[in-house]
Length: 325
Image 1 (tube, rainbow, N blue to C red):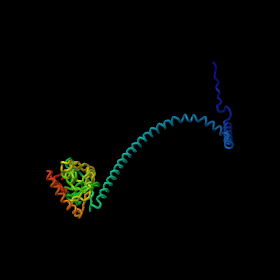
Image 2: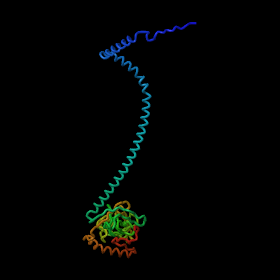
Image 3: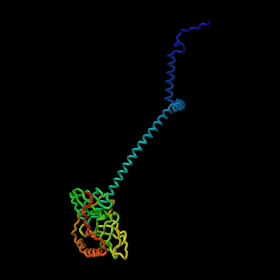
Image 4: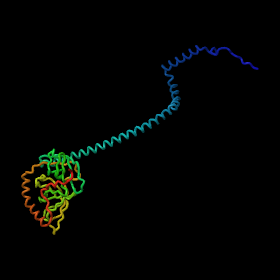
């Protein structure tokens, strides 16, 4: 049986002394630092070590970079989606504001046109908004937001930026009812701006058409003629556009021609109208009314001969039978 020898000498005591080793390593380190600082001999070694360590650094950093890229990618998509929603909402709001600005611009243009067209004709004008429209297809009536408190009176002329719109039939404290010139119960004296022929335009119940039932076949009326108000009766101002002739049919055997006209006013599209005060005691209006007496009588005789029921020439307001009270 072999016995193992036990060496009881301390391990530290074996080999070179620790102090000598420390001094040697310290001297070598100092020498290397001095050589590196003064002569830069270790730059090449440092470069080789850095080149060798770079793949290790890349391998260690790759998982972290991949994770950051994934998180940033999802964060960017979420942020872009949120920004897209915000921009879409802003675009819709901007479109709504743009539409409102366009509506305000159109409204401003209409009001400016109405005031410019009424200049020199009316002593006073008042812009009024339409509150209600009669839904009865046979009654062309509207309700405006001005009444007796604003000086509105029964029979007052109502205009828009393009022509005569109608006249007031009923007046309340803060509202008024207006009959349109296209109402079947309304009639207005008109005159051809080209030939000077006077007649009466009667509503047909169609907002795009007026009828001129008392034009004889010999009268000088042609399609395209502009019909203006005569001022006879003192209801409407003189010389304001009423309609444009669209059809003239003459039959030799008939006494009267079939004449239709299209109103110049936007009867079915306006949102604001113009209430007008003017001086009916205009000498030219009185002269027109005096010279119109004989043609009116002649027309009455022609109507009686043809059996056609007469229509009041002064465009008087219809009886108070409309809705709105």
